[in-house]
Image (cartoon, rainbow, N blue to C red; front, top):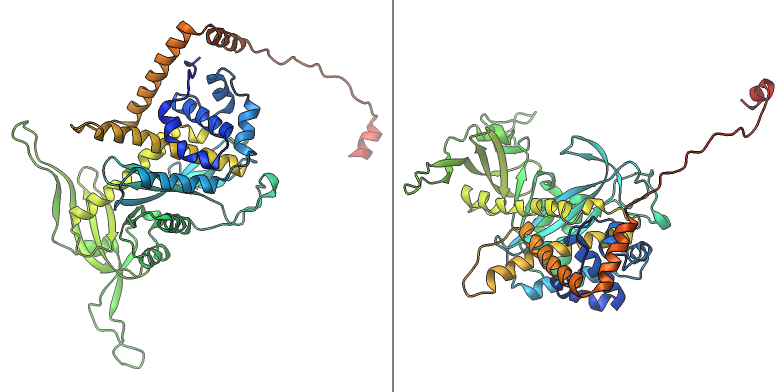
Amino acid sequence: MKIPCADRLVFIVTGLSFLQPALTGIQFYNLTLVASALVLGSRFHLTEISYMWLKEKAVSTLSYFFSHAKISTPEMQRLYLLQTMNIYDISGGYFIIDDTMKHHTKFCKWIHGVFFLFDHAANTNLKAACIVFLYYSDGGIIKFPIAFRTYYKENDQSVKWQNDEQNKTIKKYDLAIEMMEWAIEIGFPKCTVLADSWFCTGPFIKQLQGMKLNYVLEVKANYKVKIRSKSPKYTPTGRLAKNQTDKVELSNFFSTVNSFIRCGFPADLDTDRKEKVLYITKVSTVRFNSIPGKHRVVESQIPETQTYKYLLTNSLTWEAKMIISTYSHRWVIEEFFKNAKQFSDMEGATLRSKQGVTLSLCLVSWIDFLLHLENYKHCVTDKSPKESLTIPSIIRKAQHENMMVFVKRVQEDNDFVKKWSDVTHERIYRKRKKHKELVTLDCADDADHCKAA
């Protein structure tokens, strides 16, 4: 058995205090209990969380809190975003957009948001919920999730939610636009948008241009750009055509660009480290066939693997190094997905109602925010700046603090020791189900059997 939760974590209680206007006292207590248990190593399993608190809260109580308590999750999300702006002096940075699959087993027909979806990582269809996240990073130690939306598969009638809830299918890039508009409306500053090639579409970019946002997006190599025709084009009547352009794939276009720049790390004579080339880049300003406007595009080749990546931006004065360096900040959302699944057990939540699923995703987001806030305080509190810590380091620090409180309670609180012993002993033995013998329920002759068939 894991070390029980000796007390709610201080940074969880103080860090989530901004939610108190939207919650009753007991709801806030339950929320911080669950958050503390998740940080201290429990799975997102209500029975496991109950045992971590030595059954201080019954499983049914926690289940009711998530799925049926009168809670306004939109109001809680609004309070959360206001809190991030109160804590940090945000004047710029990056809006990072990506989606992740929240996988489930085949026994999840009634879990909210789960469909048969194609997972590009696994290259197959899986039972999963698709969650689109909007994440923020200042390019340094300030980082946190802003919002999320659940993507619903179009025209899928195989799943019916509890209480016959109806959900509208909205494209993923429209969900991303919706979140950015919501954040800016509340008061968040406009930031540079970073996203992978699945969001690099004409309609998405047109909406970004309408919002007057800068962006750096990965674009697929088969997208076509317009180039001047090598020979004149004529209409069927023999007149010179207005359109004197051809369309070529991006990869073929850059094969005609001769100038390139190598980017990487310089040689270091003190450590005898040799020069290392990370990217061989080509850059050009082009117009796409399916994307509105003029764009700066960089082709980035990784020499070690001989793989290519193409990035586009509407900042037409940027050079290749600037574009690649800016896009590299997109990686923090991948770290968030990893932490959310490994440490907060985002995929382990098997709550069935819409409110339960939404609240569990909110909690995962808020925990990530609080862990990065602890790192921020660690780096800037003292006069002398300190090196940034990893999220596992922050979690181990919280687990160590819980262990010290736990030891103290074992030494001084006999009731706590007895309760721990009772709960542990109760979990030792589990009886197997009794084997039931088959009995004859009814008899029938062959004629009756044939008639029934």
